[in-house]
Image (tube, rainbow, N blue to C red; front, side, top):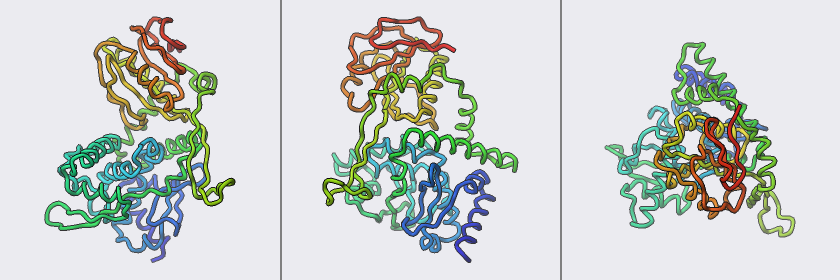
Length: 410
């Protein structure tokens, strides 16, 4: 059977088994690429495509081919290619992302060597909890191993050793009577193509993916299939998103236009004009905004919903976002993920100073601070960089806050 026929057969089986992912696969460009070790999501202009190594594909059993296709589609549908670069430890992020999506693939279809949450029972991880959760839990376990010599899970200890040594494969003891098995460390080399996209390119890709997800969902419903719950939840959120109450694009041009950070990256593909033996350097300008949410008890659920709506519109402008929640103390600091529902932490009293102190101590990380609040407090700490205070529509103006103050109004 030719490679084209075998791919068509696997696509048809995926369509029959899970129509949504079958329709999603049909809409994506697919290429054979010998430079890709196995398979992965790569760049096709301003879009995603699947790149597959023909020799690797030919060696896979038919059921594993179906699982491989779904695995790569899940990376796209879960927006891993856009959130990946926000994680400091890229090797650990690779493991966390594969651990998340492989739970949505039947064991019989999961290719050998894949990361399986069941292989790490002593970590006591929740199921289908999201990449951010797995990254944080695995990072804690890795830090525990570094301090005590073990994370408490022998299999994960071996995985950590492999990540530290840069090995391509690690042998672990599997659970039950299966004996030993080889686990491949996830390597998403093709994702590097998406790291240095401009804000405009990021927005175009995000818009196209939203459209493809909607079309795949519509086709699935027409064929009386079922759209995965998490995907349907994301699409529902897109439909419910209200128009922004503030011109965020204009704000980013005027208020933070002079505050863009410069990032440099060494790349081997680009020659160094001054020193031929050294790698080239790529310079990129981008904004990384710190968005604070007042989660005190005086802020109503309606106000929190209003704030989240504006944050989604800020994200659609193509900037990096870190969300910090605070009542009297900082409750959480995490990258914004449009797919995941932001859990609110706090609901106590109100203090603005903890966030302002954190902002002043991390000015090199962020281009500006946007603080969403009802304004029912004053601040004694003076910010050392731009701050925009965004008051809810039902709140009263508080002109004493240090920085520019606006109130959301239609």
